[in-house]
Image (cartoon, rainbow, N blue to C red):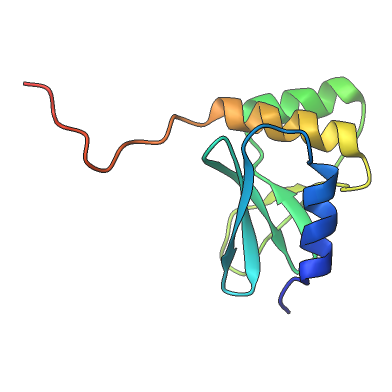
Length: 112
């Protein structure tokens, strides 16, 4: 089942104000980017976020628990975020983006 554009719009509204939030449609679903880094996605009308160490730490410090779900068969488990909890989702996504490496340039010249 593909995700609805209405649910994506709701998630994007909840994330408004975060720097560099973008999305890309991918086979009926949507990948979510924060500052150019893939932090999660919208799969079957569920907001799933990569379970990176900083994201898990923010979630633990909040005292809240999110389950883990598979975005699709054969994928790694991701955090099933509660999109109604706007502030926590924003903090978890920012933390996840901080754990990911900077985007590499495709045409970067190699140093000799």
